[in-house]
Image (cartoon, rainbow, N blue to C red; front, side, top):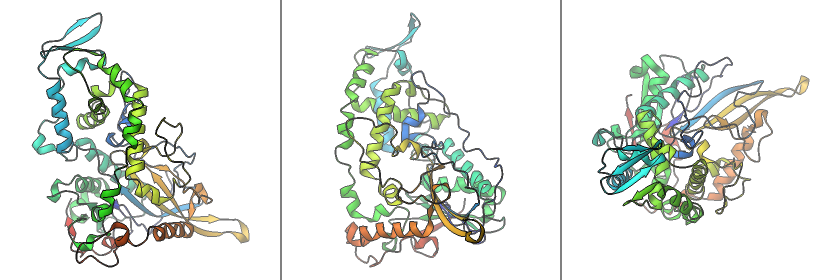
Length: 461
């Protein structure tokens, strides 16, 4: 989902382009107000669910406060927003059902020496942090209705973001003007798209009482026309080469082989009798931790099965998945340019590329352009800088951070992005686009300016 802020024309959830100043003051909207409780085995298990965790602000890993630097005002803000917390897709839900079948048909529980034991009719017993499986069942109450849709937590995350950004940038929009949010259509029909649902929830938070009159979601169908090739919010959909080169190799499986056998042995010791978990079974447990928690609004029992160390290894496995498979956007931004490749034999401490900090449900990538007064006396003047925030934490551009708050001079950043783009080359050649009728020169992001394009649909919130 994308948003731009402009004072009088449009604002989008890629939230983008403001031409007014953000003013200082204490903002009432909290950064987030979802509780992240402890489990029996971890002080804070949910972030280890990584992409399946509810949203939370990233930690200040770069030592830069996210407040606007002194003598600076935010002139524009562009937000790229992941969909909010959601129900599982059909394929994932089938894994839930398969796990339920594996542990089903139990008889009543009994207790010995304060240790709860679940006795299964299939002749097994589970104890300690697995004792709950005696009556576990997938938490979806109406799967045909809920599959792949935004959950109640996802709706809250997105509407909260609307309220937060309206308060954060008070001069970017005035009531009574049209306000647009762009969303990757992702699914058919449009009303079944969790990305569109996230955009709609955002609009409710941003425009409140006036949402029906002035709010519009621009649904961008990345496969709806040849004109969408290289010109959408899902550009990989029109890049055939992406599908053949984004497997990530064996990096994740090689790393998992260094820690999962030990974890599997420990977990299987919690079970006696006719039940043996596999490595693929246990790697599903942290996934269930995140999903069940945000769907029900209560911490899932699955969050207590892995130890803190096992959760740490699981989360790093997700780092490897994103780093070696689908890190095009983070690579292009320039914030990780000086980082060493992630190792496959250990979990590196204090790594900057830690996807648990920014690829959460409703994760955000924000670009702020700031007008800053620099120098003093006769040498004082104003310059325009850009800074990047991932889940509200500042991530300086690796080789361009001499501005206020380690920001980058906008002209220098544009030169950096131009250099990276030129190195990648022509889109059609790079992506091996052969579709008949494809544009010789892709539009890039023309859909933000031209709402008449044939792959756009305007949707009311």
